Length: 170
Image (cartoon, rainbow, N blue to C red; front, side):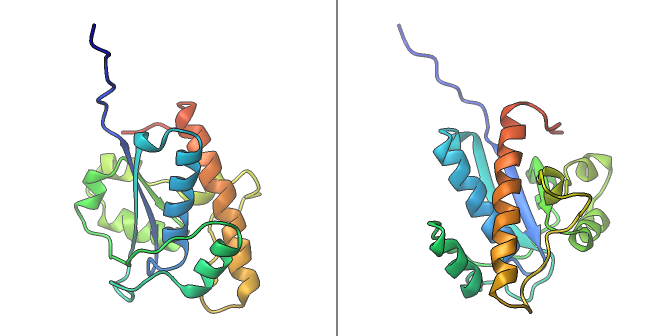
């Protein structure tokens, strides 16, 4: 008897920040790491992008990678700008802050696309009403540490919410 294989398409998630070199690539790699550790990595396809073209082709910020490495997460990649068709191709689009959320909503065509957009801190159990993941780019290393903690909590909770069926996907 042949074993039945689950051929379901993976849930496609796009994390978005301004330049795609600090917050969104970290969220992408943290989510991927959590999913792999939970044994569900094959259920998700994750990427990241920026709303601006400032850092297209650039590696993630060295300060963020240093903080991540000190906590056991090593990653790389190249910055890219979001494309209009991303709004149709991804099941869930997660901006890091309200400014990027507004940019994505302006790019959206129709309610179906808008329904795919959810702020990252919606999944942060310690958000306390804060909507945005702060951008540490112009600050000190403590800001990068804070962002790592926020994104680690938020991506863990996002994965848990998806696995529990608590996130409505269009």
